[in-house]
Image (tube, rainbow, N blue to C red):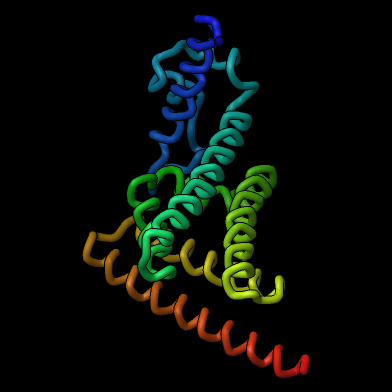
Length: 207
């Protein structure tokens, strides 16, 4: 059992992470946040920040880890919804768009820091996106019995498509977002069809 002090410390740590996420917007990336702003929103003194994080960069990396965890949870939610029946691609894209709408600042963090000025943050966010792609590749490989390289190529293409669409969806109205979602579903189906044809060609070559 955690002691009262440990529980309070974890509560404050969570408050700092939430405050930093809340500060993000289409106009503000993580690199533009100040320690004073984050601590004010979290309701603690600036000096208390250092009891929880070495600096803002350490806080940011913790946020990237959380964003990555959210993506992995997204994959689990998608698999659960697929098991209940319905189109794999339609359900997957719908789940991803729901994630973007419900967690805009989590997605903004991944999106902005993926191409930000900090090498450390770029490495961290790209690593999380690669985890996302690898999990999808494993699913494709097992479901379709594709060679690993083909499964990963398809997964990488899907991830690039949905992340690009997610970036656009952030600032769209509901009707525009729905139209975009349907286009992405169609594009991923085209990609899947191409992967099927390529897999057949590979089998023919191996005979």
